[in-house]
Length: 119
Length: 207
Image (cartoon, rainbow over all chains, first blue to last red; front, side, top):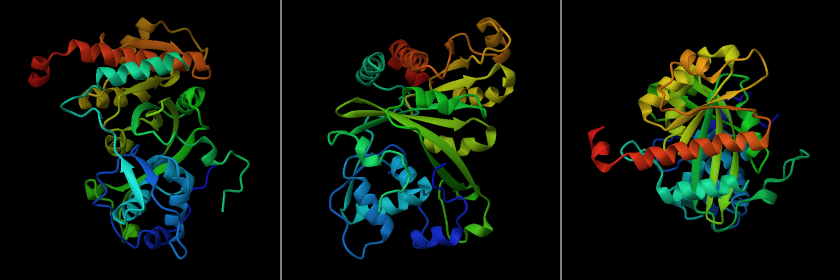
């Protein structure tokens, strides 16, 4: 149905990520919104260029993964490259619930309810 | 350079430039229970599909080098989204709830507003593990029975079969119907709101 890396060899994913692990990607949540700060440049790795085109408007990390047909894990690494070079900025979820504060704030819940009722 | 499929290009349904806050709700359940159907019913975009992959040994570190030598697990999931207002967007994730996938969901769903466990009465046992895990995590959730029109099951019977805490809302829905799917999400948001309101700071520090 959609493009998938499932049949691709690990070698290709290895090449895309330059063989790196994603140990430093903890800051990028699945729904962190990423925005391109510059246009693709000639000679850029094609996946990086594709991300910059896709993220002209804010786009969640999982959406980038779906549109590129790559696993979220790989996309986190590619996005980290672009963030490190200032070509992409990340808008992190601000009030995400956590173990110590498991519930979203009343303001957020109210906003969600209003929007759902208006669907 | 665009995809050659006939589907709408992603750029045409991009978020507003002002979008800054993303929220998430997880819809979990067994295969074929209607997770994607529910997401599709309320999503403003055609549900998208992607994959998460992780090596079990890594403990959160995904080392792709030498991946052929490791036991990496890949799991596909669907998601849709609802733009709430010019600054906020809600993502809905449909994910298989079986035990072997939860180490992935722990990361993917951390920070979720809440979860919907979608239940099919023909395979109730598929939901048990998801319910246990969400209870352990302290993630607020409700249970929705996607009614396929099979044998009549009262919600009381179903609650008993699921051994569900009386405080957890149990609703019936038709995941194909937008109005019905919307009511499920409203029930979850209202449940989270009442939980948040009833929990005093003193109770919070005691847990």
